[in-house]
Length: 132
Image (cartoon, rainbow, N blue to C red; front, side):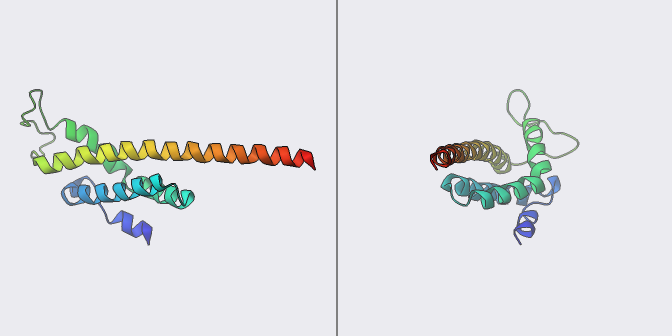
């Protein structure tokens, strides 16, 4: 069910106008779940599916968004015959990329914290097993 929900958020680069806000909401939800530091395995499984399904769209956003504006920033440029997107969509793209970067940092911190706890637990187990 979660796989179907994730796959219907955005169906590709042609669906960015409706898909970007949904991807932004989903990434915000995942970020909140990662920061809660609860249910680590489930949240990482959701994160994996989200990134697996939408990796091409997320990877394609950065160069696509940057080439829309020319050097003086007036946004007259276009690529591949695509018409220039409105300011809200460009802002949503930037927000999504920032949210994905924040999600990456939060997940890394959460994983490092879990690794540290596991390492401490293993050290304690080794110490107590030698006492017996």
